[in-house]
Image: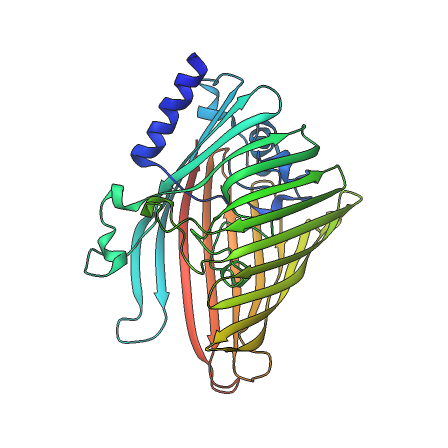
Length: 393
């Protein structure tokens, strides 16, 4: 009874003011000595609230030191509950052209809380939520009207899961991202924005799979939140129903290859997409190479007929770990909205430096140069630079 009351109280706290999004650092697979993303996260595909193993890794291998435990070890929750929170503050320089450019801003980017309740060894309830990050000042637009904390509350992840153990089969139902692709903290990467995994675009899913030491498989059926749901439970972007599958094979604790496919459809459009993910850890060089590529066939319904277009999106990057607590990465991205037409490509070059001075703390510098336009000889450009301070409880 006390456990049920504790769950109800924690759920109430979420409803009163916290909600959020799941994110992960795919760069830490292999580079930290951990081969499975689910070793550090309760999510069987990685992302979201971190496990006791993940907290230990954050102190022992990822940051310069400290105590990675909840509340820095001052208080330990009961064994059947895991708690956490993320706060990010950001300063932004953005130059996208136009009479308002360049723009400067400072804003709270993330305020999320997490709770996981275990009912025995195999059943758990996961709740995640937070405040939508928003730099827009109050005005008459939809974004501008999200001015109060109540308006900006969103619960993006909440699910019930049965799981045989740290490895083995699992089944879960609720709201989360279907396992697919590289799941970066920064949502602006093309491989997330243009494959159905943009920020606040979580769906309601029935998902199952199997995780072993050197391979895993995830299969998901998904649908958007019903329109009758309140705004705090709605998603952003394309409202699609369909299915996704992701499989990963790992090699010698230093490399992996993943294959994936997804079908999403609504009354106006159907997207068929498939692709691959890869990582290679070069221990002598302290360098992790990672990439993703996806082809999409987008079919749009036009009256009684249809029209189709082929698209491609990709990410290729490398992350260097010169010393403990520091990682620096560069990446190249490309998205082409129509492979049959020249001048429809969108390209970006990224530079990112992450410093973890102590467990629970992160400083991040991120820069992006984006170029696109009617031809490669006369591209339009945009640039962005961001500084972040990240703290997790």
